[in-house]
Length: 319
Image (cartoon, rainbow, N blue to C red; front, side, top):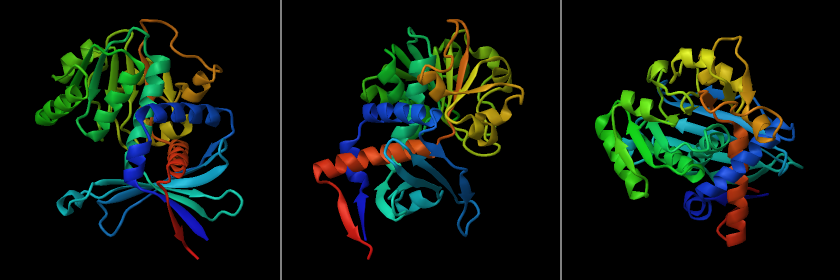
């Protein structure tokens, strides 16, 4: 029995952000139409209870691929010269259930998360939106800003966070990538924004609802577990809400803090033309991404196809 391996090096060389945006949009539509499935996620930790990992499983109907992604966070890794976050996706053979491919997915995880943000912005933000505010200073915030720049002509990117030095470094990194980026205080940056992306591990609101300008779009990207929170509940009580997976969002995503009476719409339905998008230029739209396995399976399968076509895959015999 053989399994194909796609390395981080191969994935970085062969898969682009534009690829990820197209793949994730198609995956959301497939999920809405019932062609693909996602299953309940599982969370755990190692011998140190401060470590954590999550398992997200699903079935990609477009490719007839079941599988799962394991995402881990080991805070002590940087001291060992390793990344704190790690992601690996296992694709199964639909006919046998045996492993088909093992895809190193830390880079792909960043792309698929950012792609979700871009897909939501393209559908829900005003067409003339030009000012992006990113709240968060980590690597994922970098990719999300680049992704939004793929779907809107940005004149300005504000970067803000609790770590002022981190915000300055991220703004400089984005400027090197060609964006007009600058670090600034969260209150002013939020008030100036047409698009707001929150990309943090916060457990409390990052800014007050009153700061958000009419007509702004918000993508809440950070909440993916019980207790995590980035937005003022007042925003969730008065704005139309969309999510990658509504059922998951109200359990572990940002919308666990929304009133239970609120309707959370599937972004895939809107993308398929079977659900509403933005109704008015002056309304504030909110999208929550808690991350679903289908994104991981679809981008891993895309990377596998690219690697095999380029002869960059590795075959291992498990027999």
